[in-house]
Image 1 (tube, rainbow, N blue to C red):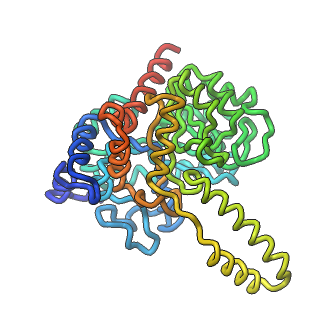
Image 2: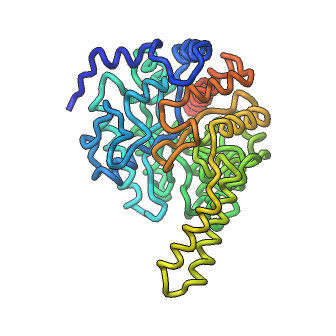
Image 3: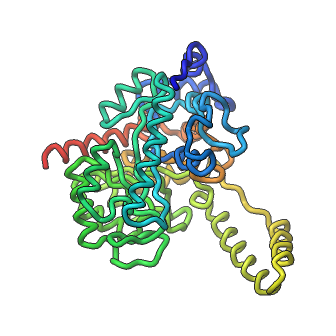
Length: 404
């Protein structure tokens, strides 16, 4: 079904549609920057939410309406994408880590179909992009460039031919793994088996370079990151990762890897997941898990008592809250270590239960840029963060592919 947007969409796209809470002088700067450079988010899991909560049917979610009031609220809808000034979005097509073999690839195909359907439903808003030039052209037309980002290399089943078929189907990046180690790459959140990449893993990275598919190192172990950075002739990305020096979660990027990213020309796109942003929250979560285990041990055979005990602990030990300012801290750390040419935005909206305070949905990017402006960021550097760095890395990957 085609959705006619008419005047309401024109108003939403207008620079006069100001972001609430952003000072007018900052909003004017942001609007000028994002009129020239598309804001490109590296990771959004809307397709996963439609799969899990709406029967895999995009027609059950009217993206032209505010989705915060739905039975399963979302971080994403078209009015808020417009309010957030989004110019390009990598839509994650996600592979659950427990799926293996051909069924994993099938799951990705189903997610790709969901994205294709909602992009087709709103042709005045979305258009598929397959190159840096496409992204810029679509942005200039007033639409949101839409790209597939495949989260989890399990889907290729260890076969280069399947990898090539996904690229031919429009997949622009592949996250090498997800939460589990695979037969060819170690995950950051599972026991290592290869000491990084296996020989097949190195072949896969080289083939991704050859076919113009960005290598995404989010979710990989530090040794896998280093192996991929050694092998890759094209810039890599981290589609949704933050700085380990600020928050020690293994999903984040250590400083020695950030320095290698600088040499490689890659981009670390900062994740908004609260546990990856706030070290205090990460420590609290670990303590909560330990308390849950303790309550279960104390109340064997009485789950109600264990639950009550944990609830009492949480009431006495409220969770700290991740904040927009902490996300800005991650961005500045990556800038300071890797350089301003190597940082971007990868929110993970709709792949996380909630965002940090001040970053609750896709409408809030201007508030983040305003915070960085308050810290002294120039318009040129905000443009690099917003999308310029990703476009540069993608163009370089395209050149590497053209010459191989």
